[in-house]
Length: 145
Image 1: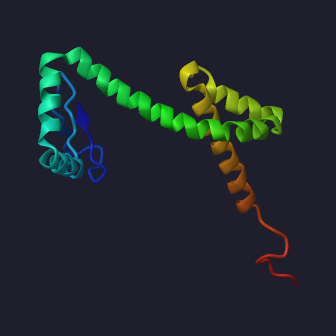
Image 2 (image 1 turned 30 degrees about the vertical axis):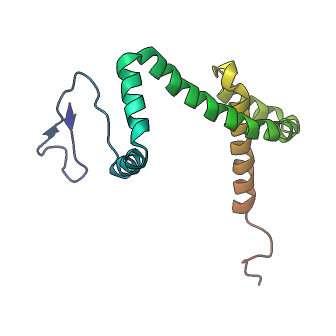
Image 3 (image 1 turned 30 degrees about the horizontal axis):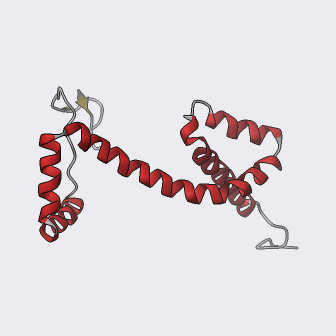
């Protein structure tokens, strides 16, 4: 695939990106450093996970998904506290705002619906707050003459 640099006009040299059959994994040196420190502090964890992946890959996958599910549960504890306020804000909105929120929630998996709903309501609240701050106020910074 040809990639054109911002600094090169359209007619100049074009760099070719190598075509890859499979996408590679990106290594983040800062994350790798943290992982290496954890491995050094707890080498038995490294051995356990290495053997788990080698001996029982299905169990290793389920363990990774379980960690994701625990994070989801933790996120949902916060969402469930925010949900009543989000519903109250949503109910007070004009129909066009409700429609905009509903459109963004179309196709969201029901498992994630409450979290997505709260996120969209918070974005709408932020958008409305920014509009209020951006609106010129009478008497502030205006010259009278």
